[in-house]
Image (tube, rainbow, N blue to C red; front, side, top):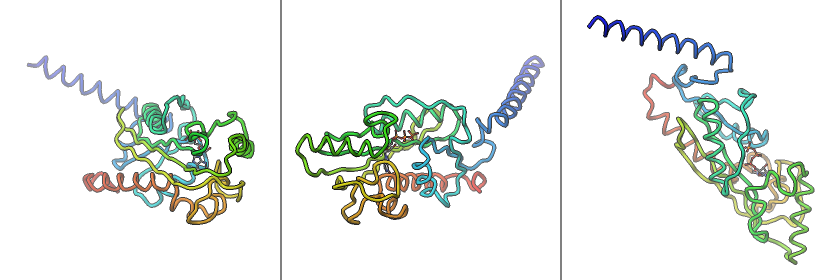
Length: 246
Ligand code: ITT
């Protein structure tokens, strides 16, 4: 019996020491592990290396009572290889990778621009279309040149955003946002980023680069996906015991 008590004490002591060592390590690594447990409320990593995407996502998550971390808090974390064959596969892989590397509930999204007349290219290759270091004007010209080759004047086009939330090695939420439109006759506008100057949104009669950030996200693929994530998180927060939220 005495032996049992001794063993239990040793185990508990050992665990406490381990936890203390881990907490010290967490502080040194920029809260790499365990902040959810420490703070009680939801901490979520927004895992994107794209500053434009990040700005849109953060503005869409505004006023949600969660602690948001970005990859700036984890500068030494490696970027995952994106070798999925769909937006959803890539989004899941990114979310699981960054969640594993940081120990945080993590959201990631994979998005892109699809042109019907080009068999939905650039699609999942949007960020590296033509060449990884190509400029967007070069990419636009490549798209228009492909259309000229096919003797096509115009085409339907869309932006797609697949979003995944990962926690504890699992995907806990997934959604997809799509905005349908037309390939613009020529690039127009200076706002936004990426393919925005060549995506015409018919209800506005303008490209996404010609409208305000608010007008874009009110109807965009990313706006739709993040609004669904917001509802999911709000629901999750409502089911947490009061003592775990603040
Ligand atoms: P992360 O993987 O780190 O999030 P990334 O830019 O590599 O960053 P993706 O692989 O999802 O992200 O590629 C998205 C590309 O799709 C992006 O670089 C643009 O070329 C295009 N894109 C996506 N959303 C867009 C938007 O709202 N406006 C214009 N272009 C967009």
